[in-house]
Image 1 (cartoon, rainbow, N blue to C red):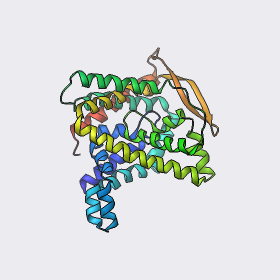
Image 2: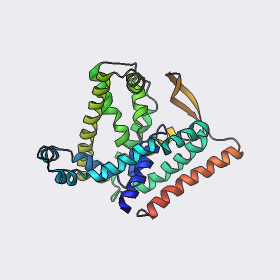
Image 3: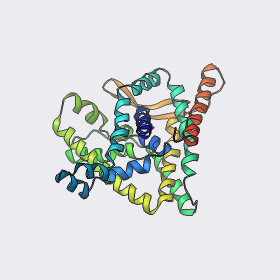
Length: 298
């Protein structure tokens, strides 16, 4: 019971993270130590699971897929969408500097704690770290594509967009903006109830979820240090998007709402009350990860 409560809370944290642009649920899963189990559980939806399901061997299916774990974690994420995530969304809209600062501190210190899980820092691990960092940084410098309702491209958007949940440091919604289909898939298709586009997008997301989970599970099994180093690089590269002190330099309008594409970063010129609180929030983010690492069972 205690384990499932903790997993539910971690799921809530993953849901909250998805509200903040540039922060992904995968980052929180990695910080809270459930990333590998999450990937391996998703990967277990294979031919064996299908065979158990067709033969109505429900208990074997639940055990094979670690279904209770997945239900608990994703249940927490879904719960947060209708509860705590709305609070964070309100805070982000009204006090963006403080929320950016908190998550910056959280992500900053997590680089150290995630990197600490790498057993051997060799040249390949360092190269993986550098590549992961460059890839994450490059996402913030890509110009958005034009909207494309081609069903094959919509399927592709589902595959790529779901990576925001699975890969730390990458935001699924931000990727869809870069692909030019954020408004089409998450606004227009939903409000117009375009069953065709929504179905193709869902199938692409499902395929991407299963495909990436198999790839990541294999990489974590065969090249764990290098994979963790790459994921650490993703997290490090995302710091540019989360830096608290910044101004919008490029944005687009979607459904009368501004979606930011790029920022101009700067250092605060004076330590006024607002900047002092922001600095405190950075330390609060650092402290949060420290507590999670020091008392993981609690």
